[in-house]
Length: 433
Image 1: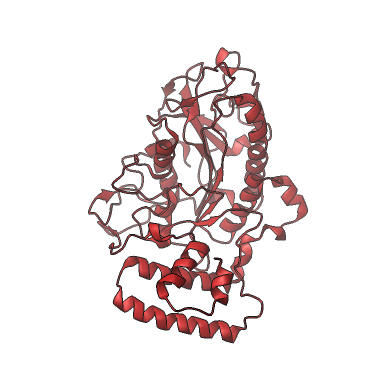
Image 2: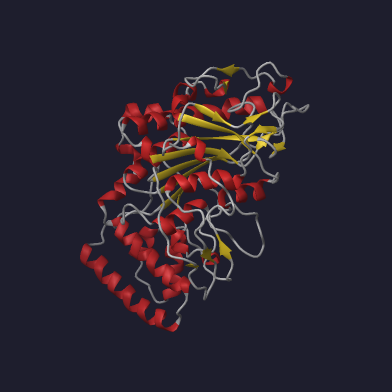
């Protein structure tokens, strides 16, 4: 059921049935995400926002494990490099794999972090750690970094959600133990934007108001009987949906309003559309936008598959950096490109690379990051971190620090356990202005 269907519905006999459909369609909040009778987690101390350069984050996640040696940390002349050439960039001494020739022209804005290291080599556990800073446990679901930012920093624009996920999968962590209103708003297709966000044809404003009044009556009776967090969350979701429908800022989700030349620059791909939508969203005040690209688990035919996968990333990310810079938004927007781990330096008989969490790479740009540099190094074959090792918690702490989230701020979960945004991670302050 869609938001349009719900508004047009005349049979609103049950509060739970009506709002269950609403939450599942309008905001991706399903009943399974809303455990009953949980208290809202509370900070252990008053929250004080830290010094920040970044107002927003655009986090590009390459799901499956991008090969670091073939992309951000090439090893020219070594057997582990395989058939991929290295290209020079606008940053002295920083090479990229041949797949990122467009990005090479923007490297003066980028810091490559080449010394990421982890002990999580399975996709679900590694992805979970990358997104939450905590190891996956059966007893609790941790909040993603976007949910932390949404909860502690709030929104720049009250009409828009604070956290949007473009193209993400259902198993990506979101609000965790935070209340469900801090979960990401999912957008499956960036080119299609936010679906069913207008009042249905044939429904007048007066009819719409009467239905809202009827809903409020049902809400009051049900809410008095069932004083639980999930009940309140459904009501809040509907209120937010109506507010968004009536806001002029709903146009932020429509990339068709962009000039054809700019759409061409980003590329006619899912990732390119996602980058363009992300730029529009942060421009309108969305604090945290995530873009997910799938298919990076290259156990076989690694080089052919990268030839198919990387052009969209190269074009979309390059256009995003240039566009943000031209609009004066890059200094206040932190752009991240990351994957849950790298791929093995050794190439197997199927011309593939396997999972490799011991050493891998990511990149940061904008938001106070000093561009034109590589932080940390791996050995000559990309096997071991030689200098400045960076844990996943350290990497996430750097993002949080750039946003102004104090790393020692404690939030207590409903089960009474204390958590910090990046666990025990320490930010890489050397790369921040």
